[in-house]
Amino acid sequence: MSSPSPKSHVAVLGGGPCGLYAARVLSRAGLAVTVIDKGDRPGGLATSHKRGKNWYDLGCHMLHEFDEEIYKDMMSIMGEESIPVQLDAKIRWAGSFYRYPLQFQDMIKGIPFFTLVYYCLGLFAAQIRSALVPWTPKDAEEALIMLYGQPLYEFFFRDFTHRYWGIHPRELSATFITTKMPRLSAVDVIKRAMGKIGIKDRSVKAVDSALLEETLHYSRTGAEAMPRCISKAVQAAGGRVIQDAEVTAIVRDEATGKVTKIRYHHGGQDHELDCDECISTIPVPHLVQRSEPSPADEVMTAARQIRYKPIAIYGLLVKKEKCIDGLYIYYRDRAFHRVGEPKNAGLVVDPPDHSVLIVETTCEIGDEKWQGTDDAKDRIFTDLELENICRREDVVEVNLLHGETGYPIFALGFEPHLEQVKNWVNSVPNLQSVGRQGGFTYPNMHSAMRMGAKAAAVAMKRLGFD
Image (cartoon, rainbow, N blue to C red; front, top):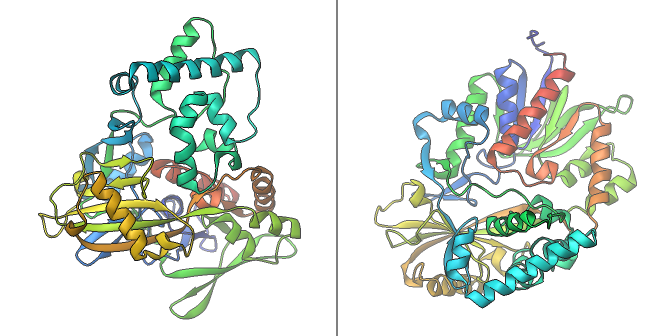
């Protein structure tokens, strides 16, 4: 490898898993790198926050072992802080609990025979239609019907999708299904059986589901340990990680178009950082809007069409040793869409006879769930009681956490706007926009880190290191 020049400096905007791992790769190679992150601790949305004596995750975030290189590197970084834990996820469906992803044998056991036949006939009809008259779905509703049939769509997906996103499936892009929606393994079994009698699956493809059995990795202090350990490794290798720093401008040279400076606000003062390469993981509309000089009007307009779904996480300290059977459970018709109990994965809770619940909701900025009003909490407590998770008198603390840009929204017609913004990013010779917010996509932890590693490799190649 070539010796890096001390003048080569890479700015990484955003300190989530993608940005931190990009910095990890760069700093380990000997390049000067600075991470600028607006959070008070590393990790972005994939971290946890301490409230009182306990840690509360901003969602359910654990590391898979699928990317062997990243997995081994993370184990070397985390050491004894890493806790292996077996996947134990469930979904509340048809009045019972099922393993997640859904298994064929579970559907047979849990669904009345004639109801199951009805769903299978709907799926069969959808496959026949796709085989005889191939068609391209115009929205998420049509994509779901193509994928699972009308009966399953109406029973399972329509209301859940609408409640989760606050948007009817007719107003979501079909791309949402191929990028975000996990396949039901139960449906895959039926489709394989159809294939054996000559009915091939030509419909849209959903995302591969997680394995039924796999080992995840967590920590006694929750999700915060992993990004904290990466940040520490970056700094040990000579890199800088600046927390509580808001990027205010990405300054480009008017002659070359290259990013030359990053302006940011930190510690009550404005600062300026010179850079030779820039890897951005901040929400891509923010990248466009904070660029100087401003991009063309059509790029600015396109950036305004790219939206994210906010999340409000209710972290509850509960006077109960154990609340749910599993790591987390998905719900279709409650005030929350997922409840996790990180103590079941090894989180240390104080007092020991209490537990912590991570109650996840989607919302809009400023609405009742975002504000944590009494009415919003009452609906959550009522549903927790109805699910026999805990009683409202068991709740000792309510800690409200927020994510303004929780999930990319694949609204109907978003693709040309995103493409226009990506084309502008690609036109800047030393700029990359990657990660969940920066790439407007849905990577899990190891996939986000891999995106960061690839971005680091591109930056190094541009700087002449191979």
